[in-house]
Amino acid sequence: MDKDLTSCTISLHRDLTALQPLLLQPGTDQFLWPQRNSTIIALDGGQSVELFCSHGFRKGSPAGKDKSATITCEDDGMLGYRADQYNISQFLCQRAVYHVAERTGARCHDNGTIVRVGFSVDVDRFAKLYELCFDETTLRTHYVKHQLTPHNDHHQRAVKRPSFLQGGFYDGLKMATLYSFAGQHATLARILSSPARANAVLSSKKGLFFARGHLAAKSDFVFGAHQRASFWFMNVAPQWQRFNGFSWQRIETSVKAYVAANDLRLTVYTGTYGVLKLLDGNGDGQEIYLDFDANRDPPGRVPAPALFYKVLLDEEHDAGLAVVGVNNPYATPEEIASEYVVCEDVSGAVRWLRWDRNTIDDGYVYACDVNEFNRVTGHLVLDRPVGRLLV
Image (tube, rainbow, N blue to C red; front, side, top):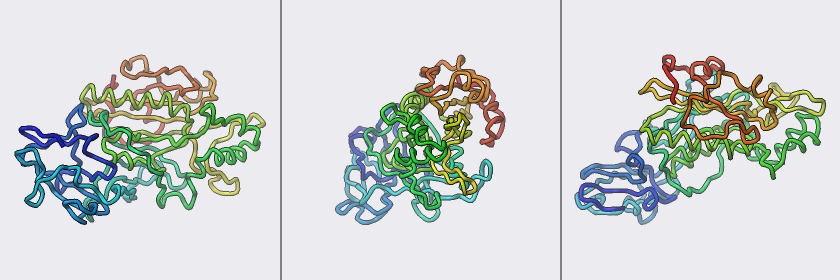
């Protein structure tokens, strides 16, 4: 922790480890954030912050085995707790803070289930990071909703990726197996009625396989504890690895940089639309899923989307933009124009996105008016039409 004449400062990189507690505004479900365009959290003299560890603090911590401790910034730049002074790095959790995914009881598009993901601080206090609209029949996520602010462009780096969680949402399926290259190959061989066709479309060397494509990206979250909470299977969808690592990543990076540079606060819906089709051995298009049983209704679950999208809403300035990516490296330019561009392309008016938008192999991308795009998908319930483009 750095010392300052008027405040206590906490560094994301120097002071917060993998066993970091949550940093909350005391008694609330609201997180504490760094300063704009900074990795430093500044506390005014006399300001308090609540630290929370889901499994209690580590042995030897000033807070003992408690789950919550409220510390106060003192005049000399140290943190006061129970009449003594400490550094934030002394407050370590017993284990990494536990995140949960809970059904809310609310419904969304096509009778989907609204699920919230975050941290259960106590019985009546849930610190939410994001929510999503999940179809429990087809096992697809229509969209994930979260917030992007200037803080998000300065997130903790080198946070270790945890294992993905599936919770009680996938009817006994082993999602890690379905996403494995061998699992994908076996399923595509059944759908396309040909192991040779599966061999032709899948190639690990060329990045032609389905990655676990994050919807709300790991790097969309500031703290390591928050980033870990992005690793739910409901927050990913089958996305061609090459698309994931090239065009889609450029979109994610461009959006965060634009938000930070313009001091924006956006509501972001990242979602999926349609089902990818690939040609079988007879030249007929077949819908692609990671779980498939021809004798079941529905036969396909966990669909590979035809499109990924980000709807960016700037409510303060009544502006928005839908950014859309084609999840099919085998589509021809003619097929993209006729089957995948579902709304008028306004990319020419968007100066801040950095992409090589016409490279089909890396993922063809375009942009649309939010209102027009939402008329096509029907995914979002908006309070009112969006007034102008976010350009």
